[in-house]
Image 1: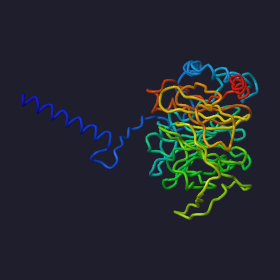
Image 2: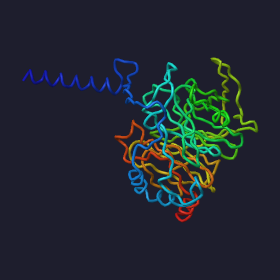
Image 3: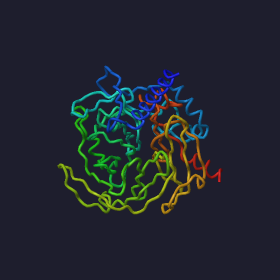
Image 4: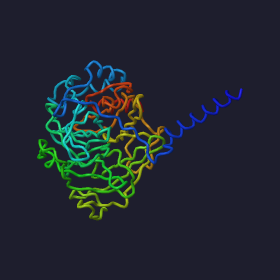
Length: 378
């Protein structure tokens, strides 16, 4: 009997040890398991697919609302009929040429797609290294051919949760982080196109703005001269702050801060703050409506549609005009010339085994068709 009690006590102690060690980092200030990245023989950024077109088509078919809008309208490539086979493949999923923390050139095999937008004739997407060993990157593709033009290495390893193109000033805004607060990086399109991806040195930035009132920049969009920067919250409501952009393309309200030879501007206040749903990954405005993408985990994603109101204090589920089911792991959404672009992280190495759907293409859907669905649902 006594031996049995001893074994019970030992079992309880071991169980508590596992819980405290694994769940709370007991005994260590910061416990994080770093998984080694899969090896590759590649020396250039990959451009091939991870999954077959049939696999991607099944994911699209599982979301009837998405399928109809994807196949509607005209192709951004040639203006002809839309063909799923011609949807651009997300670059770098198998391997990306970038630099590690020591500045050495190497190949990341765990790049995870995050942001997407169109800049003129170019489709630009962003990704971070899930293994936290390599610098984050931008991929520039020719929107007419889907060909990868170049891979741009960014400074450090920001999550790059969103990017947005400011056509008024021909610059790309990128979500970053600066000393524990949200940072917005500005890079002129001409600098991106002139980037030497053979040397692959981290690109110089045209501007860096630290948002003093926001801890993290999770997603971003530029609309009507205003920069909307969102905060992703997996458990409760997030928020989206508004920042004015002046005629020079600078975020208004910024004061200079010289630090570590980097010119950084700090914005202390935002124009306005809107509370959003939880788990929001992206936001865009089109045709009098606001669209918010929501996802977290391997289950289905959602696309929420609201009436556009830039002074609305909060977006809640009950106010949604329409909610559309989307494939899992939907990240940023953006709009260009009547189409909405969607990027997914389900084909990244970190999520291939757990994701319910696998979409390794950058999908685009016809916004006119989507708006018709919205009006029909009202």
